[in-house]
Length: 70
Image (cartoon, rainbow, N blue to C red; front, side):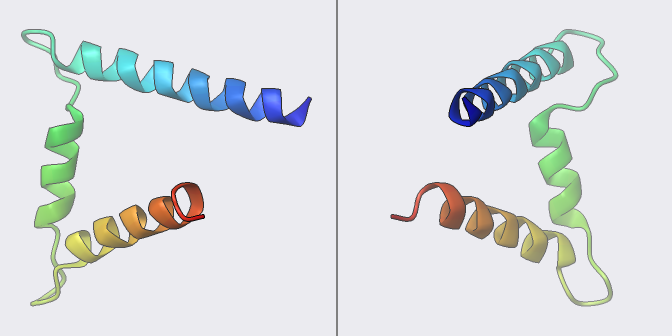
């Protein structure tokens, strides 16, 4: 039961992500696409430290550790 609920939650999140990305790519849309959000995060720095890049790297590491490592 919980497995089906978790799978349903991930599928719902994936469908919402796809809908927002589709809406962002329409002509004249004010919604930023995933590429725009990633570019903004990658530019974020505190002094000489690229905090955005470190945070994005940490997020991908966490994602891979939890879902891809076996």
